[in-house]
Amino acid sequence: MTIQDYLVVMTTVGIANLKAHLSEHLQAVRRGETVVVLDRTEPIARIVPIGAEGLELVVRPAKGSVHDVPLLGPTRGEGDVRAQLVEERADRW
Image 1: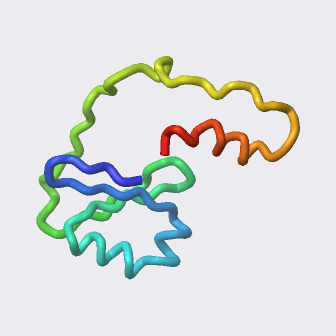
Image 2: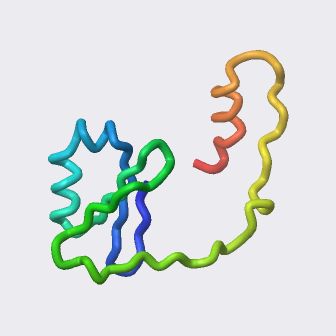
């Protein structure tokens, strides 16, 4: 997941992924990105470039409501559910 705002790029990464790809994540930090480390879904740490200590994340209110998101229709009961989902969302791509 990447969030882009004025001068901030933040990536979230799980612990296992961080361990497996530490060099790549540190290269991203060198480029100015912030990496948030997750323990499952809980943020536990933030890796920021040196000199970015004063950089704060600004949380803006949502533009809509979760209730505005359309729900998926019922499955047709047979066949590959993934294929049905891809077919249903084909107009979005």
